Amino acid sequence: MLSLRDRVEQRLSGEVCHACIFRTSKGTCSLEAVRDCPILTRVDQIIDIVRRIDSPTMDPYIAALREAVCADCEMQKESGECPLRDKLDCALDDYFAWIVNIVDEELAVRG
Ligand code: SF4
Ligand code: SF4
Image (tube, rainbow, N blue to C red; front, side, top):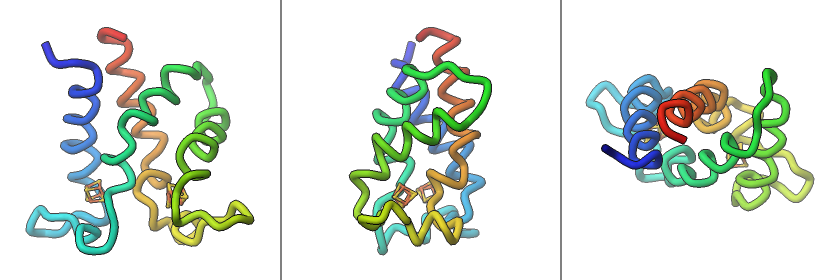
């Protein structure tokens, strides 16, 4: 049986990565040469956020994402703005509701 982290990582690399706007027709990541994947480099933080929060709305999850990930991200400005987020160019932010749902499902299997 895979660990929770491995299961989540496997689903993110499969489901989300395959549908990601940065995925090329050759199955590679167009971000690869530019910067690290914002999702696959934050698996631990994402799991921690979903573990800590139990809410029917996304607001608390998004607030936790800003605090636990965006605050340390080199892309976010001191003002709290993020040019990538504003242009829907951060895959983590774009697919965050889906990602939360995946982690929730895996936590329900065996948290
Ligand atoms: S940005 Fe991340 S999730 Fe998107 S295609 Fe690249 S590796 Fe996959
Ligand atoms: S939304 Fe911006 S600050 Fe947050 S993880 Fe994505 S790129 Fe970084």
